[in-house]
Image 1 (cartoon, rainbow, N blue to C red):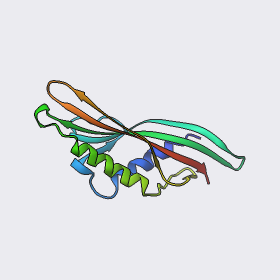
Image 2 (cartoon, rainbow, N blue to C red; image 1 turned 120 degrees about the horizontal axis):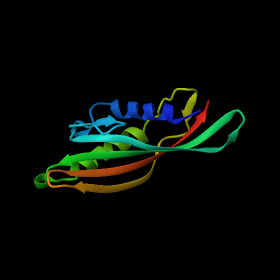
Image 3 (cartoon, rainbow, N blue to C red; image 1 turned 90 degrees about the vertical axis):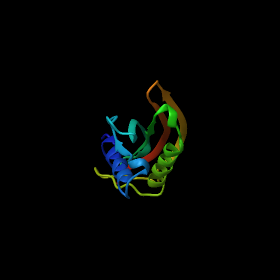
Image 4 (cartoon, rainbow, N blue to C red; image 1 turned 135 degrees about the vertical axis):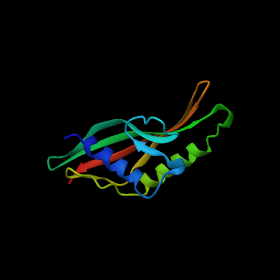
Length: 139
Protein backbone atom coordinates (compact mmCIF):
# COMPACT_ATOMS: atom_id res chain seq x y z
CA UNK A 1 0.00 0.00 0.00
CA UNK A 2 1.22 3.49 -0.88
CA UNK A 3 0.06 5.96 1.82
CA UNK A 4 1.12 8.92 -0.36
CA UNK A 5 -1.80 8.10 -2.63
CA UNK A 6 -4.16 9.17 0.17
CA UNK A 7 -2.02 11.68 2.10
CA UNK A 8 -1.41 14.11 -0.75
CA UNK A 9 -5.13 14.54 -1.66
CA UNK A 10 -5.98 14.94 2.05
CA UNK A 11 -3.40 17.74 2.40
CA UNK A 12 -4.57 19.40 -0.82
CA UNK A 13 -8.16 19.33 0.48
CA UNK A 14 -7.17 20.76 3.87
CA UNK A 15 -5.28 23.62 2.24
CA UNK A 16 -8.00 24.53 -0.25
CA UNK A 17 -10.92 24.44 2.20
CA UNK A 18 -11.62 27.27 4.59
CA UNK A 19 -11.52 30.16 2.17
CA UNK A 20 -8.82 31.70 0.03
CA UNK A 21 -5.21 31.71 1.13
CA UNK A 22 -3.30 35.02 1.41
CA UNK A 23 -2.59 36.57 -1.97
CA UNK A 24 -5.12 34.22 -3.60
CA UNK A 25 -2.44 31.53 -3.56
CA UNK A 26 -3.06 28.37 -5.54
CA UNK A 27 -2.35 24.95 -3.98
CA UNK A 28 -0.93 22.43 -6.42
CA UNK A 29 1.42 19.49 -6.95
CA UNK A 30 2.94 21.09 -10.05
CA UNK A 31 4.35 24.58 -10.56
CA UNK A 32 1.55 26.73 -11.98
CA UNK A 33 2.13 29.13 -14.83
CA UNK A 34 1.16 32.75 -14.30
CA UNK A 35 0.47 32.54 -10.54
CA UNK A 36 2.09 35.17 -8.32
CA UNK A 37 1.53 33.16 -5.11
CA UNK A 38 1.23 29.42 -4.67
CA UNK A 39 1.86 26.44 -2.40
CA UNK A 40 3.64 23.55 -4.06
CA UNK A 41 3.05 20.16 -2.39
CA UNK A 42 6.18 18.21 -3.23
CA UNK A 43 8.93 15.75 -2.18
CA UNK A 44 6.84 13.16 -0.33
CA UNK A 45 8.67 10.60 1.79
CA UNK A 46 7.30 7.48 3.47
CA UNK A 47 9.05 5.05 5.83
CA UNK A 48 7.65 1.97 7.58
CA UNK A 49 7.28 2.14 11.35
CA UNK A 50 7.04 -0.81 13.74
CA UNK A 51 3.45 -1.99 13.98
CA UNK A 52 1.50 -5.17 14.43
CA UNK A 53 0.18 -7.70 11.97
CA UNK A 54 -3.23 -6.02 12.20
CA UNK A 55 -1.97 -2.42 12.06
CA UNK A 56 0.65 -1.12 9.63
CA UNK A 57 2.22 2.26 10.38
CA UNK A 58 4.23 4.78 8.37
CA UNK A 59 6.06 8.02 9.01
CA UNK A 60 5.49 10.38 6.08
CA UNK A 61 6.65 13.87 5.22
CA UNK A 62 5.70 16.44 2.60
CA UNK A 63 7.56 19.57 1.62
CA UNK A 64 5.19 22.51 1.25
CA UNK A 65 6.91 25.24 -0.74
CA UNK A 66 5.10 28.54 -0.10
CA UNK A 67 6.10 30.86 -2.94
CA UNK A 68 5.43 34.50 -3.76
CA UNK A 69 6.78 36.24 -6.84
CA UNK A 70 7.82 39.89 -6.77
CA UNK A 71 9.36 42.40 -9.10
CA UNK A 72 12.84 43.53 -7.96
CA UNK A 73 11.69 47.05 -7.10
CA UNK A 74 8.78 45.89 -4.90
CA UNK A 75 10.24 42.95 -2.97
CA UNK A 76 8.69 41.98 0.35
CA UNK A 77 8.58 38.71 2.27
CA UNK A 78 5.44 39.67 4.23
CA UNK A 79 2.98 37.90 1.91
CA UNK A 80 5.11 34.73 1.86
CA UNK A 81 5.25 34.69 5.67
CA UNK A 82 1.47 35.19 5.86
CA UNK A 83 1.01 32.33 3.40
CA UNK A 84 3.25 30.02 5.47
CA UNK A 85 1.32 30.96 8.63
CA UNK A 86 -2.00 30.17 6.94
CA UNK A 87 -0.71 26.80 5.69
CA UNK A 88 0.52 25.87 9.18
CA UNK A 89 -2.80 26.93 10.69
CA UNK A 90 -4.78 24.72 8.32
CA UNK A 91 -2.61 21.64 8.81
CA UNK A 92 -1.59 21.75 12.47
CA UNK A 93 -5.07 22.35 13.81
CA UNK A 94 -7.14 19.94 11.74
CA UNK A 95 -7.75 16.24 11.39
CA UNK A 96 -7.12 15.11 7.82
CA UNK A 97 -9.68 12.58 6.59
CA UNK A 98 -7.91 9.95 4.53
CA UNK A 99 -9.21 7.20 2.29
CA UNK A 100 -8.02 3.66 1.73
CA UNK A 101 -8.67 2.59 5.31
CA UNK A 102 -5.90 4.90 6.56
CA UNK A 103 -5.92 7.37 9.44
CA UNK A 104 -3.54 9.91 10.89
CA UNK A 105 -2.18 9.37 14.37
CA UNK A 106 -2.41 12.81 15.93
CA UNK A 107 -1.92 16.00 13.95
CA UNK A 108 0.58 17.13 11.37
CA UNK A 109 3.75 18.51 12.92
CA UNK A 110 6.22 21.02 11.53
CA UNK A 111 9.56 19.26 11.26
CA UNK A 112 11.56 22.03 9.60
CA UNK A 113 11.02 25.58 8.33
CA UNK A 114 13.60 27.14 6.02
CA UNK A 115 13.63 30.21 3.80
CA UNK A 116 15.05 30.96 0.40
CA UNK A 117 14.89 33.26 -2.57
CA UNK A 118 15.65 33.02 -6.29
CA UNK A 119 16.68 36.17 -8.13
CA UNK A 120 16.83 37.16 -11.76
CA UNK A 121 16.60 40.52 -13.50
CA UNK A 122 12.81 40.40 -13.85
CA UNK A 123 11.51 38.50 -10.83
CA UNK A 124 12.32 37.50 -7.26
CA UNK A 125 10.84 34.24 -5.96
CA UNK A 126 10.49 34.19 -2.17
CA UNK A 127 10.16 30.75 -0.56
CA UNK A 128 9.15 29.41 2.83
CA UNK A 129 9.80 25.66 2.88
CA UNK A 130 7.68 23.76 5.41
CA UNK A 131 8.62 20.09 5.96
CA UNK A 132 5.53 18.55 7.59
CA UNK A 133 5.50 15.13 9.30
CA UNK A 134 2.52 12.78 9.49
CA UNK A 135 2.12 9.40 11.19
CA UNK A 136 -0.28 7.17 9.27
CA UNK A 137 -1.76 3.82 10.24
CA UNK A 138 -4.25 1.30 8.90
CA UNK A 139 -7.59 1.34 10.66
